[in-house]
Length: 186
Length: 287
Image (tube, rainbow over all chains, first blue to last red; front, side, top):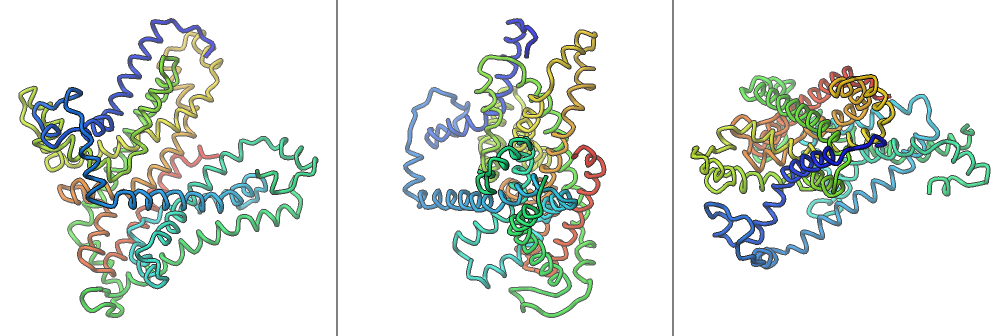
């Protein structure tokens, strides 16, 4: 901002923003702190804030009791896989809607978003049956695929608004220079 | 500008997304419609044939139907109101010059990256627990009796948890919008003697209308389907049973697919009513 800002006002802003920021972040901070406490300290009255015996015992317990690494890997695989797959499918779609719009483009976009309005619980059992049929139960691939479908509309929307902001002139210039479809996108 | 060749190329490129989504929408939807007209009890005899509209009548006449609808709408509109009101103020504050702006923004946005199940567990056990929770300690310090939040004030607690999760999203979207606000316009208004309040209502708020629309649309979609938070904190008790939770109970706890599917159709209808209602109000801001 080009307006001259007095230091006093800046200090007030800083104080207020930090106070609110810390308030919002506090639950996470408190969870992290608690994770380093022993069972007794975690429920002590009054609660201890920083001055307790820091211990990593809880982390060891978690690792010991369950196959934590495996769960973590599952999460990463599902989240990463569905996102990458979704982006691969969404990029061409969003690109063509942003740069080669037709009369129906807006309708298609709204329709895509409306598929997200379908409540997951409403279609829970059909999906379960389909999974049985295709042998997708009890593995991560079916879940990855479903999550990709669930998030596809949002990805298309985000990419669409992003592509729309690229000025058309840049693309036209690239086209004149003989850039193909592929290099335009990349 | 587009040639005929690039037009057909565009159709081809759109095809995978459109076909996948079409399949994703139609197949489960048709199956749900099919089941909703049948008596289907997986653990008690399986599929027992057609029953007409019995399931639909039973679902609506159940005593938990209207309370569930009201709970769903109450949750939706409270969270929308809280996150947008606070989000606008927070976005304006975070846009001001200050020290450590980057760190504050990360602090504010952090809750969005906490998984819903985890955040519900954290709030339930570490904050709202009536004996060991932090709130209970705080209440005792001031000599008050600790409140058992999730049973005595279940709905406000749930709204608090969900708002905490979604405030960062609203703030983030609104902040990006506010950064594109022309500061010269604000300056000119300030010189003409416009007060802070009128600058807010006549310049900042209209500028944000598009971003607010997007926040409302996306949040509505997710809030109507909210599940993990309710499952973890109250299990649908104490008046926090939303429509989607009610369907979940019908399908999985009572093992009645037909009834649950009828509920699913109602949920789809509700989602569409809310969507149309919202589009009417905010739709003109979209383009």
